[in-house]
Image (cartoon, rainbow, N blue to C red):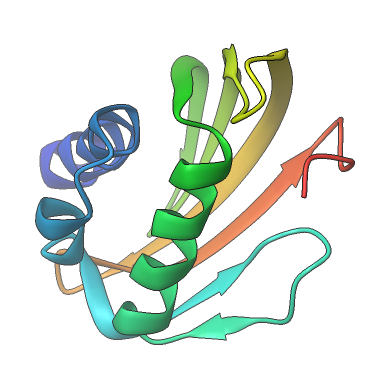
Length: 120
């Protein structure tokens, strides 16, 4: 894995954990595609950031921990676990994989797959 791809992948999850959509905007391209279970595809940086802000309100406490990273060319698969609390203060945890594609040092594609799809 290129150092920049590895750094970008870890930075993306660090920004998720800090809920820092301002800095996260710098990591994704203007036409990035985001596929999240039970939603329509989100195309474009602004729509993705809006969605993440909504998700952060639903889960005010949610921390991701990277378990494994597998890379092939410009594609990265990140196996993660997470845990936290939803807005009703109920405990939440999940496990999944996020696929990222990187082009020109920006994330151009994101697709999430996770075990519990009853979160939204």
